[in-house]
Image (cartoon, rainbow, N blue to C red; front, side, top):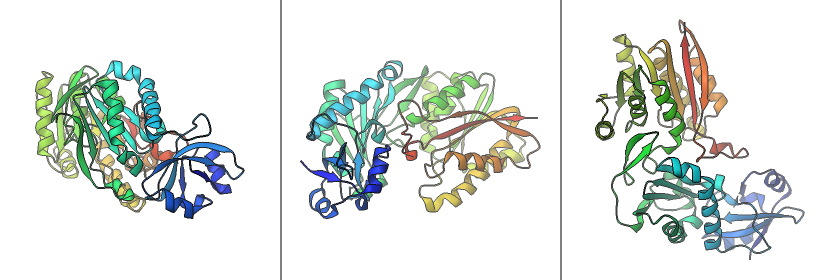
Length: 396
């Protein structure tokens, strides 16, 4: 068993609940270099020798220790014991979500005290992602645990993530168990969605936007709706399911728009209007045509993927929101989103505020939303609260 002692300042942070510690936070960094190249579970003590529980340790990234909470006794668990206990607990906490929808996140990394592991469920298909060396080399154990609990048709590792490079891991997609499943249907709020586990964004679908899609469905009755960056049409299907009189979808991906068309047919909805093009250009065109909407959804990709990109990203968010607000009919609503964790909530709202300057009507924040309860955020780790959704209302 390896026990790692922390420096004084790091001890204070760890006791306050911050789960990430760096090499400089450790007293014996030489020992860490020798022992942790492939990742392992260790015991952690503060500078006074008090036990701080267990951690997933690795020297492959800047984050040397990722705290994983307490563990009974004085020893460390085997990786199989650790993963079994933590995965079973995470699934038990989400049992109500599993019963009410066929698509949800089962394991959410640090929030479930399994850093480096994400598990999403799409009906009888499970998709996992590993971002640390310890979890990556333990994926056969993860698959074994999931097969016992769910007996899925397929378990797929969607490890085509650029952040894996920080632990010197390859970007790859690997079938862990079962037979390849190219498409699977799930139901959310009474609406069917087509998920492509091998090809869709993230693990196949933006499961974190479930609360916002439900709210769009609630607001859509009788509305004329514009869905910007519509991708495969999650928000558009919610609007059609909620009784929208018309829906226009705008995206640059022809493949995504074709899948949205198929999804509309699957749900027996009227066909939404598809606009393939650059969203910035389409907003200008719609403004020139004096088109106005009761409900606009703006869910762009992350513009701030690093701290260096924040300034440019703010300009992009500001211009998009200004353009979208100008397309609102009197009393209309804008559902605007940011998934950039480098753009904090306060800065996001300030950007929206700047976008609303000089408009000939008032704008107020009607509601604030984030990711669903199957994507819990840690108070001591702001990076886990990445998704920000604001519902704005035009008031003349």
